[in-house]
Amino acid sequence: MGIRPEHLLSGEGEGPMLRFAVESVEALGADSMVHGVLAGAPVVARIDGHIFPPVGEAAVFRARPGT
Image (cartoon, rainbow, N blue to C red):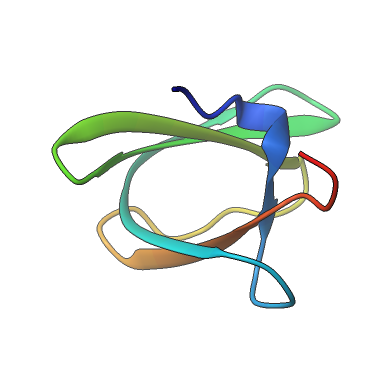
């Protein structure tokens, strides 16, 4: 089973939470891709392009409702 980048939302809220250390942030204009490792596997979250979580710090993401 995989997690698609668009299935994650930045920040806390309702639903399952994921916390991982940010390894890099790829700014793509309207979106940013946040790269990290979760349980030994690479993970990528697509978030708003104006949000830049600090590299090396833990960021919290949650599952998009309905995914």
